[in-house]
Each structure stands twice: as structure tokens, then as C-alpha cells.
Length: 118
Image (cartoon, rainbow, N blue to C red; front, side, top):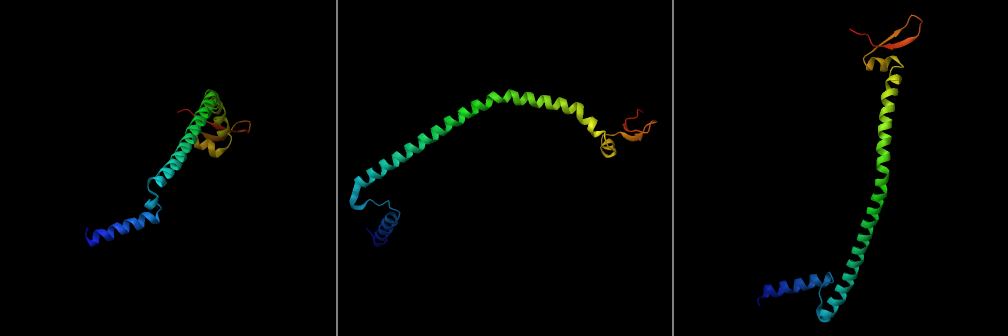
């Protein structure tokens, strides 16, 4: 073993001790206790993740029950707006011009939004 490789080995051991990974005199016993604790933590985290996924799937099933009603509400809203929106747009001169009509006064003196045919 050369001097540089010995220094490298000491450096690696120092880094491992600093990070708490060097087993040293405790040998495999310390490794086993650390691995079992780590295994328990991993198992617990895995169980928590599976529980969370199950809860999210249940919520998704509940939300799917409302989906047809939301779709029906959207269709009804679209139909209502198709009928009522032009009526409200034609109620003042600015929006009347935006939809391509002309704002005029009728013979009775009432203002109206009128589409003239060509």
C-alpha cells in the first residue's frame, strides 16, 4: 500500500464517520439496527402512500357521481345564454355596434338595435 492510497483510505473513513456511515467497531450490529429502523420507516411511508392513494380514488369515485349533473348544467347554461345574451347585447349603442347592427330611433321614438338587410 502506498502512502497516497493510505491517505485516501483515511480520508474516506473520515468522511464516512462525519456522515455517520462508518461502522467501525460496532460492525454489522449497527448496520442491522440502522437497516431495521430504515426498513420500518420505509414500510410506514409506503403504507401511508397507499392509504393516500386509496383515499384519492374514493374521492374520485364520489366526484364522478356529480360529473353528469355538471355537464347538464353546462348545456342548460349554454342554451339560456344563447337566447338571452343577444337581448342584453342589443340594449345599448356600443354593444349593438359590436354585433354588427345599427342603433336607431323608431317612429314611436323608442331606440332599437336593428339589423338592416342588404
